[in-house]
Image (tube, rainbow, N blue to C red; front, side):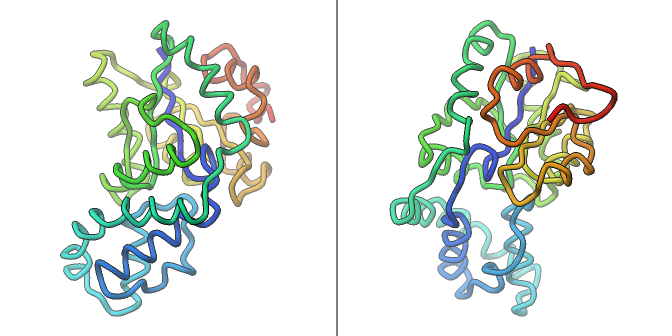
Length: 242
């Protein structure tokens, strides 16, 4: 069985800026300020890290930030849902088709789908539903509410997959799919295979340079992606196949 761990933002979902705006609104409500959330990089980050980087320059201490974190987590999915209604979300190119094509493998216990995302566990499904993706097909995950360190998240997802199935997932039986060097790095941290898509801020050559096993322009090449994700593909000459 392959454990396929998908990133959310710019891999499965194009949030049209709704995610950043929702973070700003939740920060304002929970902390009385949004800090520098409008300018800090979010690609490849986690929500906990983003909150710290937004509020620390505004003078809040670590203790202040931690004290407001539970309220922020409570409000974040509420503001995200409101923002999605205002702005809408789109699935990334090929995402719906690839997920549908994976379902026979899931039914045969050939694949198990999960998430590794910097979003909170409560906001990731809101984004997926907003883009027309059923979050129930992702049976486990590692989330930005688990740790601010993205490299920790795949290990947590693997542990949860083992608890769910009774099966160990190691090495290239785990595949991390994302759009940033941080996604590639977190997969490499556990020895997983990595698939990168250039649907975020990083072009294909940058993702290849970061060490992705395979790089695709997007998720539209369903046949090639199925081959890679279900271990039928071969990595040619140690270089990305796309």
